[in-house]
Image (cartoon, rainbow, N blue to C red; front, top):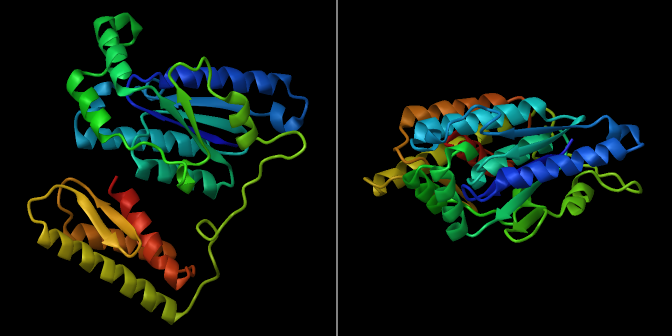
Length: 292
């Protein structure tokens, strides 16, 4: 059943909005007479349920582990009988794309709820939380500033951020009924997700396909290495690959690392035929998710 991704600045009120959605969904489930609705449960996942400390966002490695914990928790419970509310920072578009793909793979709809609290107001709220530890505490000031700086706002024009619902700070509640209809559907028309080429594998192909798979992925590896050679000393960066781009991590990626990712991708896809024009985009998406 549906995945609701909550996104917003730190201390923007994401958990408050998530609890409102939890209460609304539970009330709809209790009032439902249809079996496919009444059997649903609501699963709320956030830093508190995962026992993650906000200090985890200070270093890149610990932050990556925190994202991996959220990703694993969401993946475990995604299914036909649960509405999953992922209440985390979810501020990296590549991470939102990963979760979108997981939902798509199990044929369940997803949406993004953007808590639109202005950064100045978030800073004020965070300062108050730091001063009052009884309310759970806020983010240390340096971590807060860094997360606000790196925040990648959801874009409803991209498929992984749509449908997008923005909740202004002054609104008393999120548009709960609209979110419910977008994900569950109405009594007259239930929401269904159709598989597409990104999630349905084609029959195994022959030697020509394996040659294309090998050649295209190797060319992308060469492009990344050439870009890094031309930008020595730079941290991260975007490597253009056709109409797509690869977002490099802050530390340089070595040839053995790239070849390892390439072997994994080829191993995953050698028994199934991707269209030639899709190999490039699929490998780019695979690398972006691996570099998170």
